[in-house]
Length: 110
Length: 117
Image (tube, rainbow over all chains, first blue to last red; front, side, top):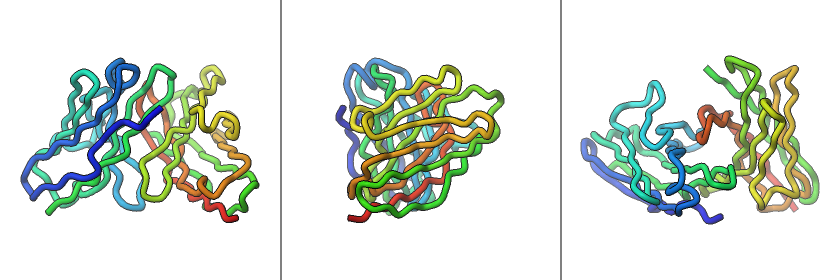
């Protein structure tokens, strides 16, 4: 299985909004609502940011939102803050009952 | 609040085996699923597999199926990941995480496994 496709990097200035795309196929993103997003700061474990396509766990800022259309999911960060500088990974459950990850997107706050 | 604590860093010679443990606390019941993921330096996470305490069922990513064993000691709520025939490119941080439906809800702190030849 190939990794889900994500841009390698995106950047924005504080206060701006930016979006990260995540593209799969019909047997992963397109076929399930189990799309999730994770934030990872350097040297730290990933943290669940979004689950079930567009749901935020308790404690996650509402500046983070997500959506899915067909085989592509997206994560939007609104009101970009310095602390949002991190790596972001998308993930999808698959028809093989495995979990597929994206290659990750490095977000830089200018 | 689910909390997962993993064992410490390991340094292994190529061809050897490694065991990483993951002790769980905070689950509301004894039924849960533990997944294992690894992350090589500078790369995204790679799925390895999961094990369920509900059914004992295991599921592995094809590339690890022949070299990975997953077990759970329910009496201590500790999960184990054994990786055999280590290669240099197995050098990575290994994570356990709680798998809830299709996402990884809580993560361990990670265990660095370094393989030298």
